[in-house]
Length: 63
Image (cartoon, rainbow, N blue to C red; front, side, top):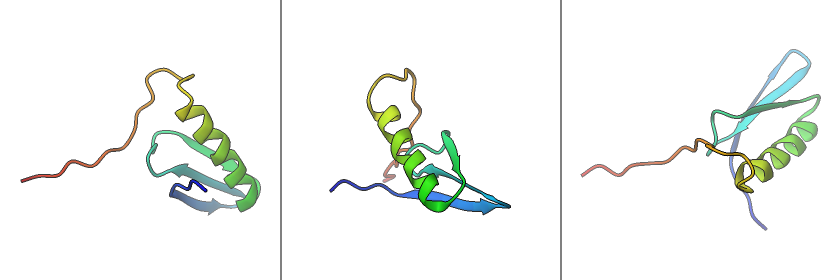
């Protein structure tokens, strides 16, 4: 089973979040489970190659 990390928070009655590897692409849900469903859909959209110019987070090792 594949997994990925995400950042989330509650703002009044909405749950907001984004995938850690794609911090520029936020989504929301009416519950935490709803947010997770939207994040799964977002991950599919971002990794399918259908969206051009997707920005992604990377880590650089310095010497």
